[in-house]
Length: 326
Ligand code: SD4
Image 1 (cartoon, rainbow, N blue to C red):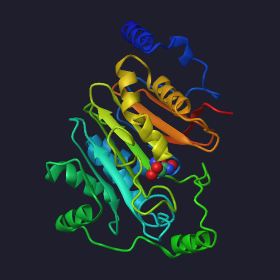
Image 2 (image 1 turned 120 degrees about the vertical axis):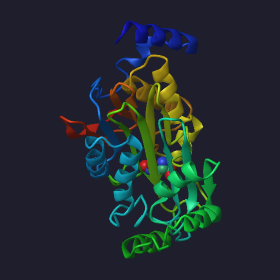
Image 3 (image 1 turned 135 degrees about the vertical axis):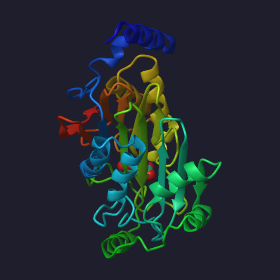
């Protein structure tokens, strides 16, 4: 750790009334970490993050921008009909509608998002259009759909036979009980640092399966599902959106990094914050990934089971997150 980082970290933690030692040893497994100076680099959530990373890597290796890389990467996952929590084939809400949330943010703090969007396969690209073509940050529902059509996106049904059958089976009992880590393919969040040293991120999801109609999670919300500050670093979240929003998960990670924490320490501290703010976390999963301006990375979750895909010039691998609860 640099002297400056150590000084900033201790000052910041002191201000919070937290001792620096509390960051150490709180995770139940080893800390993943860091690789300063290794760029380009891309990190993404869950196993399907490797699919996204491979696409992003083609762009990054050729000298392309982090923004183009993360968009292209997560689009592949949006189009995979086997993925039950993103785009095509995503499990619907409790009334049988597939509703999508996504956002994107670049190295200039420009950002765009869509929420509660239906019948458009690539919400992340609509989010990018919101960022680039409108004076706004977030469009929702019917307005977002109309905007997408104006921008040339085609409508299609995103409910597949498989996701419809799963919904019909769920409807027999209609029990609304989100359960953690049932399947390892969830929201895709991706963060990249390109050859020019610029950071960007993207996040896209169909949200919680069988949610209330109209429910929006953290994934389209800048500061919750995703945050990028090119001077410092970027973070992205997955898991129960309501819990992530309550602590502004991605924004606080970037702020903690600004004040001297490593991406790993900041992700762990954000998990700790979620635990502090909830009475019962036994059935609540939240996970974060983070990347610094210098190419250090980290990942942490509340419960065991979350993993992050990592791609650099030397590495193409999955990393288990450090988890807080046994
Ligand atoms: C949401 N955060 O809509 C998303 C879902 C998710 O792992 O990431 N699940 O709350």
